[in-house]
Structures are given as structure tokens and as C-alpha cells.
Amino acid sequence: MDLAGADGANTREYLLNAEPALQLRLLELQDRDTHLAQIDHRLRTLPEAARLAELTARLIRVRDEITAAETIAGDLRLDQARADADVDQVRERARRDQELLDSGSINDPKQLQSLQHELGSLARRQGELEEIELEIMERVEGALAAVRQLTGEREILEVEQVEVTSALEVLMAAILAEREATAAERAWIEAEIPEDLLALYEKIRVARDGRGAARLYRGQCEGCRMQLPPSEISALADAAPNAVLRCEECRRILIRTPESGL
Image (tube, rainbow, N blue to C red; front, top):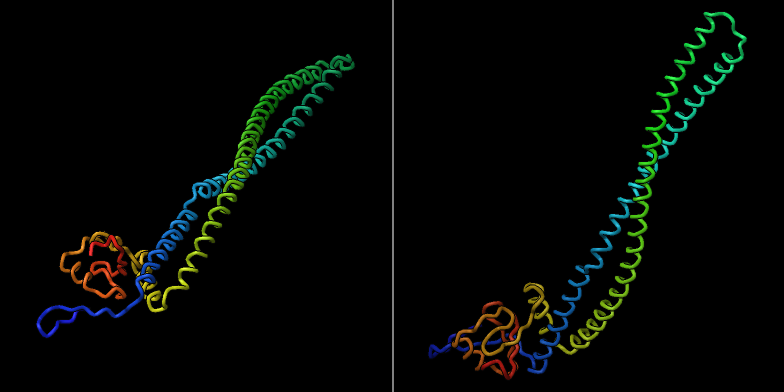
């Protein structure tokens, strides 16, 4: 905070102090935190994971469609069986009537006429039933073709699912190993930083999009990219080496280096 001296000049009191080397370690900690955030973002947005989810969803739909197509084909086969039975029944009736007519055992003209009429009716009925039978057969073939097409698609999707799953597992293992190594490095650095400085860093990091400390580079805060005014640079230049500085704009911890421009 700024305190006015008796002569009217402004002096600045810094509420937190830490050795310059430990402050520099904050930049290393920030680097690891930034890397961990990037790794986590990558894990959430892997194209392979999105493709696998897409394949899984498509496979569920295709399997449901296969079940529906097989059910339709099964129902149509039952219809075809009934149609075949109806045609066979009419054919058998017509065969018996024709044999009776050809036997010459009927001498009554009315009976002969009735039998011939029935044979004509059976022929027409057989034609109608055979048309129905043919239509059902075509529908069965269409349903079976749909089952074959969907089954082929399912097999292709299953192969790709296995390939993408394998690739994703390899990629995830590599990324998680990288994350584990980075987290271990972060832990080593964190253990060296004083509790009060670490607590301030963590508080700011949570509030400032994952960035709690930033380098002061040529008079600019690399956290908010704001160029500090000359009066602020002058005040920071007068600060003790162990004073923990803050950016007046974004309130992040400012870390001084030989390139800070002070």
C-alpha cells in the first residue's frame, strides 16, 4: 500500500517479503501450473475421444436399426409363410378338382359346370395369392438387404472403434505420464516456497484464470500485458530486493529479472 511521508513524497510499504531466488521460483511454479492446465485442456478436447464418442453413439443407433430391420424381416417371413401356405392350399384344391374332372367320373352336366367354374375361381384366386406372395417376397428381400447393409456398416464401425480406442489409450497414457511428471516437478518447487507467498500466489491464481505470478519484462506485466507508467516503474525500482511486488492493474505477483527494465 502507498503511505505519504511527512515531506509529501510517496513511499510504499510491501506487506510480504521473500528472497529474490524464491520469488523467481514462483515463475517456475507458474510455468508448471500453466503446463498442467494445458494438459488438462488437451485431455478434455482430444479429437480421438470425440471420434470414439461419435463412433459409440453411431454403433448404438446402427445396432438398434439392425434389431428393428431383423424384426421386420422376421415378421415378413411369417407373412410369406402364410402366403405360401395359402397358395399351396389353393393349388392342392385345384389339383384335386382337375383330377376329378379328368377322371370322367362325373356325368352330370351341372356338376361338371360347377366343377369347371370352381377351377376357374381357384385359378383366379391362385393368381391373386401369388401376386401377394411375390410382393411379400420382395419386401422380405428388401428387409434382408437392409439388415446386410446395416450389418456391414456395424462391422466397419466396430473395426474403427477398436482402432480409435487403441490409439486413444496409447495417447492418454503418454499425456497422463507427462502430467504426472509435471505434477511431480510442481510439488518439488512448491515445497521450497514459503507458505505465505504460496498462499498469496494460489489465491491470485484461482481468481486470475490460473495465473498468479507474472514476469516484469521491460516495464510490462506479462500477466495482463499492460505497460506500467513511469511513476509505477520508478516506485518498483525503489523497492527492496526481497519485497513481493504486485501489478497495480491485474494484482498478480510481479517477478523481477535482469530484463525488467527497472
